[in-house]
Amino acid sequence: MRRSGHRRSKASHGAIFLDPRGRSTFGIGLCARCSRKFFLDELFMDPNSPGLMVCEADLDVLDPYRLPARQTENITLPFCRPDVPLTDGVPAPFPPDV
Image (cartoon, rainbow, N blue to C red; front, side):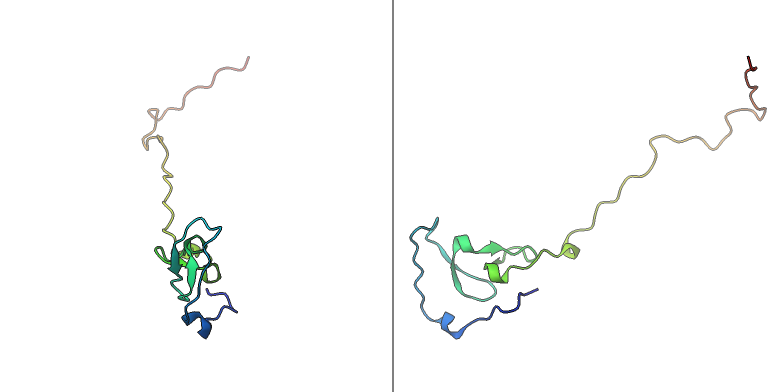
C-alpha cells in the first residue's frame, strides 16, 4: 500500500547536500522505494518486507495476513473418564434419607 500523493521528482536525481549538523549519525542512505537520499535515522525497516529501509512516506502498514499462522491450541483434557462402566451393572444404593 503506497500512500497517494508521494511522487518522485526529477530534481531528486541531482546532487543534494544534506547538512549533518544536529543529527545522531552522519550516515546517508537511499530509500529502497523512491531512491532519494536520507539520513540513516530517517530510514525505517519496512514491516512487510524485512531488509528494506524506506523513508516515512513509503513506509507500509503492517499486513496481518503476512504473519505466520497462529499455533493451534491443545484442547485435550488432562485425564478423561474410561468408556467402560465403573460398576458391574448394578446401580449403587443411595444413602437413606435422614
